[in-house]
Length: 222
Length: 239
Image (cartoon, rainbow over all chains, first blue to last red; front, top):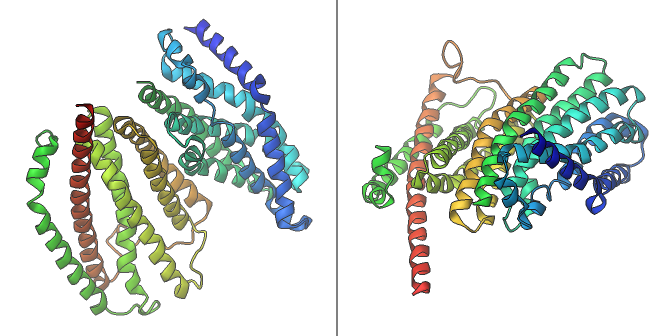
């Protein structure tokens, strides 16, 4: 079971890194959103530095969402799923592997950009390390919770918008904890609580996500 | 009992005669409750606006109750393939959405004179808003999948994910910010609300429950009829 899993992971990772521009699309979207913020709020440094970390989290959530739409759809449309189901891997594991490769292909790269985006927007440089760590955890939750939305919206008529509507309410905890963590660092309070919550939500998504996705995919494929 | 009522035919036969009675009880409870609302004393701080609470609090509770009921119905629909449970979950969603919307609206009406603003980004209001968005997502998902069986399955999964997840959302929002007054009804050592005000509240809660039960039965029945109609039409077009 490990070899087919690794093969699938390699295939999906390759697809998410190269196919259709790869992570470029999400990165471009992330940076565009970043550029829109000062344009809509004015270039006042004092205002921007106060809200930079929170807005970066919002941009990260939206950019993670954008690329999730095609997570299962491509393989669903050309019947790769039916082939995969004949193999030894359970659907839950297939879904998990797809989400993880999505995370490596998009979430991790967006996370690596997060400290830069934060600092460009005016956050103090001291936030960079915590920004990076929290973005890793947050984007992992985004990918897994988003996967649930993608699997539920599979085969419906309005995939993308529907998925955003389904998933965004569940993006609330990581956004709150992530932005709260940034605030804690900025006010030099203990960041431990927010960090622990953020990690707990990522683990929770890791446990719940595959079960829900497996059930939803089974429904869509039947 | 549940198995007995699982048959939609039998269910409508049993519940249809109940409906006028339920409607009557709902109307009576509302008349009584609203009378008590206006007969109850003014609050020493809030004045007359306290009466909005008798509409607001039960609506907010119902929003949560309906959501829990939807989760339970979805669970039965998904695990035991209970045909009526799917229909029940679908029938409940818009009612719950309206209750939640009503809670938000009456909260805003109360907030304008009392807090001086119709909207505050406080913990409870925000999580109520998110509950409302969840309802909308649920209804949208159901509407966007054409096949009834698949739609029921997908929405059931969403409802169960929501059932596990929304408490977390709720507590994270609480952690984020809370200005809302704390619990005053279900607290250790009995309610901290004066009995004069508790009575109208409880009658209104009962009225809301009766209203929900009545609307639910009507919606369930019309949904069963709509399915029957679709099935008949499908059969006719084949012949």
